Image (cartoon, rainbow, N blue to C red):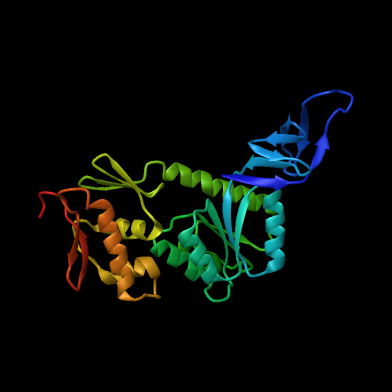
Length: 284
């Protein structure tokens, strides 16, 4: 992922005639500007009076914190390090972002409006989201800390906190996850689902799944060839906020069209009024 940064300080020796200038951006990185006519070409961007630099980001984080002062401090610190941050000021918004977007880690407060942090954490795990979660809270008793881990948080940091320690813990969580999920593959029959990339393979064909398709197929493969009830699928997709039944039927139709239609054998079977299951060829 790349992030554009505007502004900065030109650093050059004006006594030397050159078609290149060194440009120092606020992240503390240097790049070379190549002159093109009266402008400069930087990483493919043609610029004139404004200077644009593309810098590779090192981490993408989701911050769920209702205290705007604390959120601002965290943003200032990590943006200087060129991290990309998304922000949610309440638990429900944070939950939706974490379900639909990819993050390297989540910083999650406990005392949140609309949905508390413990519920957010547990709901994400129930939905199959395994992004590392660091709880950030003023609660510092043993029972509070144990409650965070009981709701499947990966780490816990008590306010007030040191930003460098927060950064180090996040980096450790990301390193740990990359090591533990290096080869996370779910398989059944000729179906192979990569849980890191959300890519399904079947007989040499590859299919990128959207979040809903991935969640449904993950549930089905994990229990295959056993039945997965409609209630289980709905809970994995939406938790307590179950939509109209037509929405689920639409998701199933799209998934079936994606993985079965090009092939003679259809894996995805509907058990009328009950649920869904995967059946491998020869097991019918």
